[in-house]
Length: 509
Image (cartoon, rainbow, N blue to C red; front, side):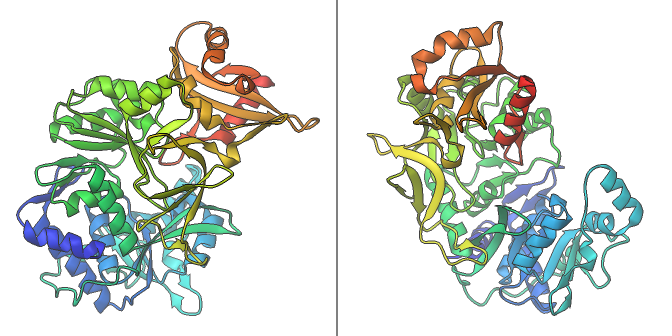
């Protein structure tokens, strides 16, 4: 069954149950969700959307964005996530690769990209918006447009109103289950203006991903999942549970308050965000049974804080996933901390939920029904070389030992930071730890610098005494630098190693 078919069937089975609670508290039932998705699907088809049409999607997480995205996929379209704030050159390069025929954006974004005073204001704030209303399809002319929100100056002439589409009343059912191999989403992940890179997921690969989440994370009617993450919100809806959405720009304090007020049973945070929530709310509500951490490695200090903040029956879980294939493995906080204390090295990821193979050079390769079709413009993938270095322990669990591109060269010794950082971060007084190399142009070797944030006096001296007890001699740093915090980037707040190297160089100077 396709992703959309499964959601529509669940909605038909429980039409009166609350499916979604928006950031402002407004509730949407499963019956209303189903009617709106079918209405948007019918309206788009009537307006000329054809199977395989790409729809450039610039709508922030909200009930409206969910309904619109599902309506696009139900109509046979492909949701193309290309951030308009990425900069004009990168945005244009991504459009050239994806070639969408439609654009869906908030009316405020159309106004901001078209009206001179608003564009000037955005430019002063460092945001260079493309002219969304003027976008063209090569050889076909102007794109078709859908706007979300009330009409504003700058919305293209002839654009379809999402509000009218969603309120158009009863719409016909899809004639069949749909094609699970049909593309459903394009997600840009990396690349340059000359060679942008985008992951293509099908309805089948996304549906398989949701099943894997539900295998490890029980969900059902009565559960309340508080998150803005689509890949946790969708399995919530397919299970008949309730998706609680935080408002846009939700502060950590408000996020924690809503967990309690809405009786959340499940939530998802990136580790840095959870730390901020716990700063405001040292004790999480007793209703929480599952706290998921993902998008970045979870330091031992945050795992311990999460365990201390939850009830005895709650599970704190760390999810290892990639845009190309998700989820890959899930490990409990207790297992991760026990692995670190054992001195086994590396970061425990858990038992693989997919087909996992470790190549001769240590690189992890993955395959399974949740693997994306491939990269846009490239041949299909049968197996994904992850760029991560890993091993399988005696219990068949994956252990991350580093990244191929993060490897440091020290004489004849190849140093993989990910093998040692968890053990260092678990030491008393250390909040975060990362190892970076500062190349020596004369020798080709790299000065190995350990950057830490933490509490207490004389932290470098204390670390110098403890490090030989927990990491290999050849991995001992040449220098320890204490920073207020380690730099992070992106929505997932991943460690920004390039910026960290710059900070280390600045300290050296």
